[in-house]
Image (cartoon, rainbow, N blue to C red; front, top):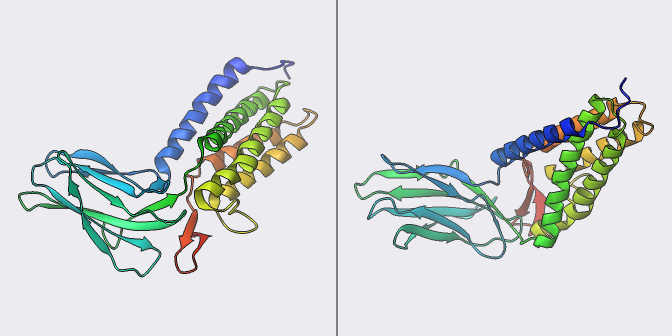
Length: 276
């Protein structure tokens, strides 16, 4: 094989492109990103409705007033409960109709749907009682914890792909990059991750062995894969453990965030994992 030390001029640009694709894919597919709707019968306007809200305020629901005399209501209830539905009218604030969905404890959820009535009597519904929109509340996470968490998770993905290419190119650097990947995963995921979780949902760890939070468990799988990857390729003799670890982390990374996430049980008054 080659006796190259590294091939960064190929592996780093490739890693950046692949990581960006993964991030964009993840952002587009997760259940907590805003729901996009098209408001209007003839001329349609794209509007985003919240599916996640942080802090201690209500979650704002805003619709642009595309026709004079347009009215809208939002109907909501706490999930999962047998509460009756509450309907409120959105307030007319000139060029938009606005209301707030009431704040919930961290990991608390509401389900809601919206009904818009136009001056000509036409009605547009966004979701329904049978198939409502879900919104999950979370506590405010300090930027000093959230920013480095995101940075290290992003960096670990990037380094993981660099290590993958370096191993494929059979260079001498892949083991060192593998160790850096594992280091970033541990700092970002196992140290800062639970802190983020604690601020957001009131629990440090909701993964194995306590519960089935997917975000925590997929991180655990990534850490185990990379621990094995680093250990098994420690003398730079085998490159398959590095390639395997990188592939596992990539697969794990593509699973949308919060697919099976924390959920507040209103009857018990505690946070549990929602296995839907």
